[in-house]
Image (cartoon, rainbow, N blue to C red; front, side, top):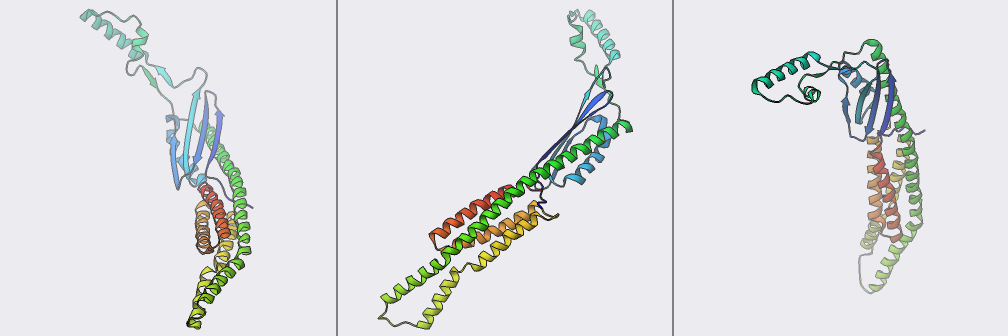
Length: 292
């Protein structure tokens, strides 16, 4: 069973309170490590460490954006007009107007409401009952994101199985050209021998060189190693400890063997197969970056 998770995810939960509506939103994107940014209203600022710990414990890595939005409903609101400040400003402006013979403003409210400290926001700290509701919303949003990652991981797993299967199938296609390739080498050497039939040469030395040349073209080890890497990739996907980094390392090893197959192929059809293998592998490498 595929155990991988995607690094991307999203969770959003809204909690209803008597005087406000609190929305928790978490977004996760690709990142090599945990990159956490939070936007928390002042009313819950004292709970920031608790929130961060919840995120750290559950989300492992990725670029995490965490936001809490508060919408106040009804008559209760933390934003208040400072009537004392307005009265003081009004009196001072009138006095200065009379003293300097400056015309008074025609729209008092427009002027007064723009002055410093007239509008103030006093958001009291949340009590335990309110925090319990908000904390449940945070945990629920985290659960949504984790479930999202699992679903995305399942889709990635199916893609990987398809691509690994394609490479394995291409690997079997190589076999039909191996014997033909060696025979061509032998035939070419034989033709050259016939051209120099009248010349004297060290046959033992020649046989050694021919064996060495044929061994250089032998790809059995590369085929075996690549086949093992393909199987290891799938088994790693199905482990609890599977990770994008580990799958990335295996993909790199697969790439080395495919490259060696290409350099040793010395056959047009085999080289075409190697190119197709590389194409499948590149698609795997691109998506492995999205695995948690």
